[in-house]
Image 1 (cartoon, rainbow, N blue to C red):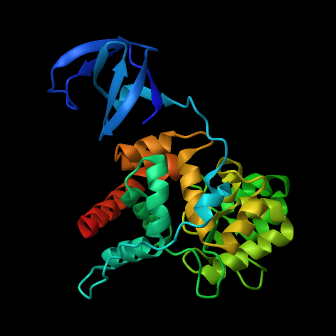
Image 2 (image 1 turned 90 degrees about the horizontal axis):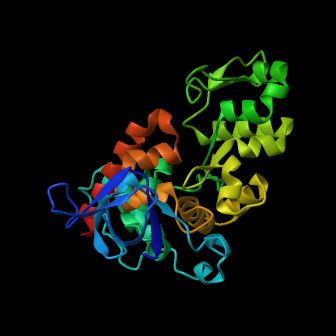
Image 3 (image 1 turned 180 degrees about the horizontal axis):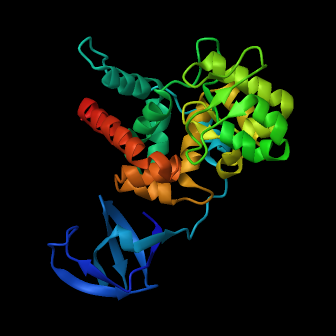
Length: 313
């Protein structure tokens, strides 16, 4: 894999196979470095000095020895990779709604997902599952506008705390559980209304927020297929949230590339990527969506991943 791991445990056992039942063949002290040879679910196959064997991944951290020279969305070669999968899945009448979602997402984006998955060394089903959970595999609404979610509590962070009166007149969220209780009030005569779940309402609130402060508003939305927040623009290689938004609105290819740039990080690896490589979906969800609903999101991603594996293999 070309990666280096650093031992974080006081003393890490090295075993002959990827199991605690496998024979112990050695140990490595904290801060030892090891070459990562392969991933076996929760285990890494490593080589350190004269020892080659398996260590549990919870006790070793991957470090990036060869940071990426550019982000994936900037690579010209990836712009010409076919977006759709060459090996289409037949969507049958008896499929469940989840199976249809998984099949359609793979059929629409599997060509590029497959190529990118090889680059970052994950099962392409992981990426399909994330897209299905985040946006049901859809990047644009019927009216051609990008799928978004406006987050009131993020707008508070980037604008509202300096304009408390004006923010309070138009935006609400639940204190202590900021992802809940989002409501919007355009004017006193219209009253307070929830808006999540309907794109026309999301865009109404977003456009209103843009009229107050465009840069803060764009930082406060999650965008497109991967539902990456605007405030994460630098993490996927964009100089501004506006630049990210413009690219995402222009071409759904940037949605797929953005997902993989987010997974990979500024180098060639990240905790999110490592979690997917080991099929640790709850841990991945905690990094991707935050810890508040990690168990729920992790379960959903794992379910869609299992469906992808069943349909494809």
